[in-house]
Amino acid sequence: METWERISGWMKEVYADDLFEKSGQTAGHPLLAAEQAWRQFCLVPADFLRMSSEKVDDKAFRSASAFLMYHWGAGHTAGLSLGNASSGNYNVAFTLLRSFVELLFKGVLFQCLAHSIYRERLSSALKPTDALVLFSSHLSSMIKERTSDVTELESNTVVIFDLLGGDWMQSAFRLDMRSVVQQVADWGILGRLHDDPARTVCDLYGHLSENVHERIERTDIGRAIEEGTDIFEWPAPILPKSLVEFLDEFHLAMEAGVIAELNLVRTMVPDSRLREKCQQLLRNQAFRMANLGQASKLLKDWSS
Image 1: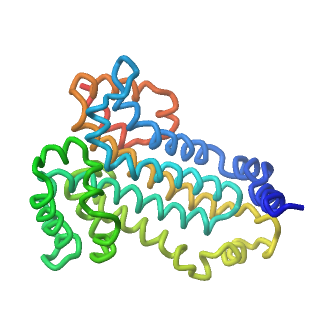
Image 2: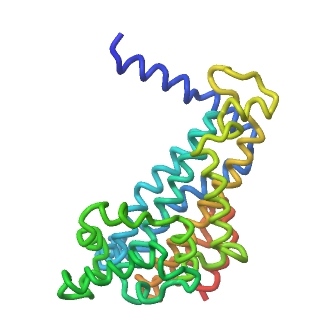
């Protein structure tokens, strides 16, 4: 048997159809809402950037390009996260969900930092010595030195990654996710995501990090013991408590993502298209099934 055949056979056991079916029966509507929320996160930017002719608005696309570079990976990672949770691989699912949060917020951060209006309006909650403050200041200096026309960067934000010259500057400054989340929230990008958006996301990120750092109760074996299921079972057992816990956090992460992307694309499309797209989305059955209550409030405000 070839290596690829052995790997393929193992993968089919790990992600067997009956595991997905059992998760669907166990979770019911919350799984449906989570799946629809993920789809909305993936679809909203392209929908709002599409003109009435169904062609993508090239100008708007380029103005959102820094975010879209991260959005592609974020959507794929979220899908993998949901798929793993639905097949009983909870530690992997939670770990991938944290990766989604990082992809989302890094995308929003660089999208905003490409605009002087955001670079010059840093959060008062950040200290002068905070890595994000130093990073933004250094980035501003680089933009002045290397970009003859600042509006070119703002109209094609993906250029910011050319300025950064790879990941050396990001590694040097070690941007802290809590600072990034706080800054994004203070820019108003998280809108109405609960009373304290930054704290809500930071609490989520901290909990997801427990899985990344492999606390024993966050391993799949540890979860199975806590839920009174046979350990070392193959394939992995479906754990109702862990599945519900994951779906709650997944749905919150997707709503944060949808709200963030709505706030970004709002500034990139004409008001008439914005109102039309908001109205269409509010009528969309799939969007309503996603149960994105806070995002719906934004759409209602903008559609009038």
